[in-house]
Every structure is written in structure tokens, then in C-alpha cells.
Length: 332
Image (tube, rainbow, N blue to C red; front, top):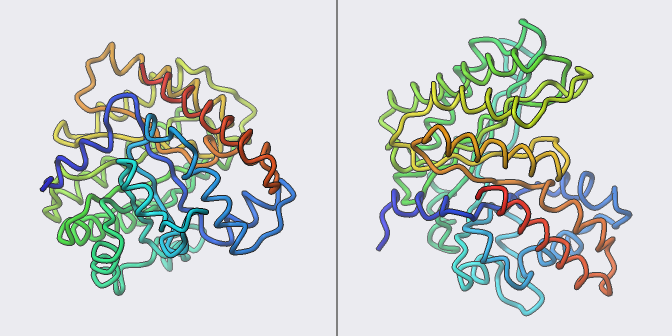
């Protein structure tokens, strides 16, 4: 039986990454299906998942998939539960276990993540019923000049991530901790670098204080980018230099691996920036494997090709596989 460190290491196997397919029902409907003219419904959300997860050959590029609760209860077109069909391909099924964002009482313009209530029971059920191997919890960090984020919001989100991580390890799964730095805003890349340093530094400190096993976690992080309203487009080399600087300063060497979120970048931008980061990490002899855990950046082209029409599924799967190949190639 694999221990948690082995599972974590297998999730960041060289040349492969993790598909984030954990959009809530609302997000899947409004940000994935509707923009491509697809009618929002539970069945169309199932078809959306099946389009991606049942693509022949995905196991060449994916080690794991983060699922949403609804998807765990659904099956592919052949009638096999999604978690089981992934396991059959050697892909580890994961599950998003946070319950979304709520306003932070001490700073109403910021959010904290809820979901700790009843978490141990939910984890036990996921592990027992679906044999999930890892989980994800996301915090959202908003930048607004030097006003936000506040130190209190950074600390509260770090504390909740650490409490979640400890419960997940107790339940026999690997926690993925995701303190996402939002791309919204007009902040500079320098400000983003400063914030990400504070956020990851605090998270690592609090997890160690809470006795989280740092050799059995996965860090999911943003890249260091200028705000999307700043009017500035960063070069891949700039993104790589600042992102690697933050990680080398904040992440302990015992962490088994780091995965990047695409966070509002276009598919090509997310691929090009990842390639620059991977190249620099190799030059710097970074102590941990780096890979991707993308959602929209992997899905977008396939969704546009599919457009909800059954006859387009083969072509859409080819497009999805082609994007996976490109992102995987960016790591080498």
C-alpha cells in the first residue's frame, strides 16, 4: 500500500500534470457551458466531464483529476462511475472539499473559505465510497494596491488551509493546498511577487505549526503576473524569474511537488509561461518537481470545438489531447 508521500510524488510524475475539473454546478454552467452556447443542465455537465475524462490516451499526460462532488456521483457514457474509470486508467481521482468563499468579517472586501464543519465525515465518505487519493481546498487572495490583502486575511486563510490539510492526512489522503492569488486588478508584477511571498510564506509556517506532514502535501500556486487591468503584458522570462524567486524563498525542500493554476491566462499564455518556469527551475536545480493543474487552459479549446453537439465529440477530444501534449511538452 502506498503511503501519502508516495501518492504525492506520483501526482507530480515527470511530464504529466493534473486536470482541474472541479467547477461547481454554477461555474460549470455559467463559465464553461453558456459561453459556448451549451444549455446548462446536470446532463450537459456530465457530458462535459465525459468529453474530457473519457478521452482515449489522457493517461499519458495526467496523473490525477480534481473532481466536484456532483461528478463523483456520475458515470461516463459506458456506465462506469467517473472515479472508477479514472482509477482503471491509472489516474488518481481527487475531490474538491472546500465549500466556497464567504466574506471575512474583519475585512468585508476579502474572503475566507468555508467547509471545515463536517469535513472529517465527508473525507471518510469520499475515501470509503470512491477511493479518492487526494483533495483540494482553495483560498482566494485579492490584491488592491497596498490595501489588500490584509495580514489578517492571509493568516486566517493559511490557518484554514492548514487545518484542512491535517484532517485530510488523518483520513489517508494527500491534501492539495491552493492559495490562489487572483489576477483581477491593476497591480504590478512586483506587487504580485510581494503578495505571493507573504501568502506562501505564511501558509508554510502555519502548516508546520499545525504539525502537517510537509512531505505529503501538494502546493497549488499562482504564477507571478501583473494584474489583468494593469495594461502590462509580462514576458514568460519575467514570470519565470519572479515565480521561481518566490518559490525558492518560501517552499521547504521536503514538499513533494508544486503545481500551477492557470488562473485567468489564455491556454497559450499558460503553456508558454509554464515552459519558461520549467526551464528556469531546471537551471536553478529546484528541489521539487513542478507541473500543471489547469482547468480552463486545458478545457477551453475542446469546449469550443464540442459546442454541445455529439457529432463534434471526436474532434473535441483530439483538440483536448493536443493541448495536453503541448502543456506536457512545456515541462521538458
